Image (cartoon, rainbow, N blue to C red; front, side, top):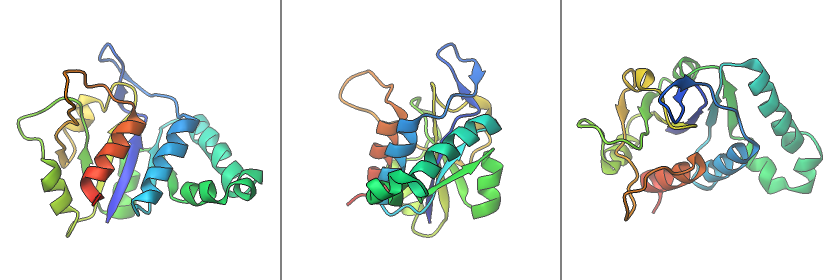
Length: 175
């Protein structure tokens, strides 16, 4: 089974400092829709601060239990895949999945997209996406692997997390 984790901590800022980023309404909407489109049952939103998780829950409640779900039942279906957690250890406990990170930087031991696609056939994995300027290096070192960066035609390589999730999930499970 394939899971997706959207990390808001520990991430880095443009100066390489470790930070917690803010949960955004757009990330919840767009990443949940990608997961639903590709048959991914669970999108984990990871944030250590309860106030941020409460904010995300308020948005989710609008679409799952409030007027939003009546107004747009398709959006309600997408929000049903979201789970809020404080850290990736909670994902590990719930799923037993291997944690595979994403990064815009290539490393010598990064996994190819074909390797990850193959791995999903017989192993539960959670692909983790960092917000801000990416997953903090100290967390990257603890993961079970890191996927090759998404590379385009030029040398620019700083996608929004919503775009990165869409491209990566299509590469892993798309036809």
